[in-house]
Length: 201
Image (cartoon, rainbow, N blue to C red; front, side, top):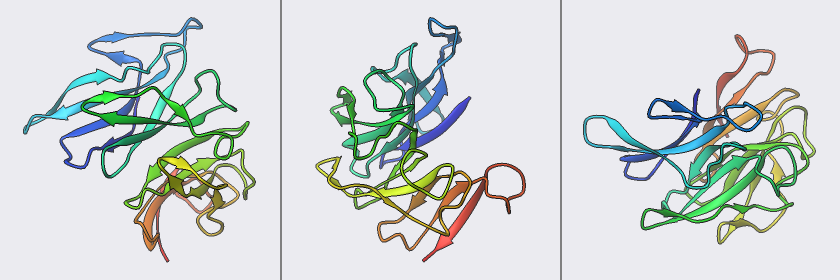
């Protein structure tokens, strides 16, 4: 599976989610599970290539759902690595001169005993993410958090109805003043399972 992707600002490099498979070889955990990993790829003017796994991947836990900041200096992602607060937590890594730092957990203000996932960073460096651990309307809800020096400085806010519903709502993409954007949901009025919705405010 190839999943969520995030582009660097020049759109010549990206990071994407994929099961542990690269250059024709797959890797499984000790329990026989093929985990998710993050890979980077570059565009040579004609096609995407030079796929490389990020250094903090592991065969024994998953990393996925990348969200690169507009200035290309940080990336937020999801992982169930040891030392977290729950099922899946949000982490941050810094990026400088082509090198990634060690992952830093965003802490208990953001992460819960449940699952936090699908981070997104707007042009004002505001964080959006989905969670089933914070108080919400049901299933995954979308939350907003202010960041200071890359880390949250207050408790996250539930975006409320009609962005959130009693079902799973996730994967929000919006501009800095949240005047319009897109998100995914499996709410009942959709056509099948997960659908993409547009909103204006």
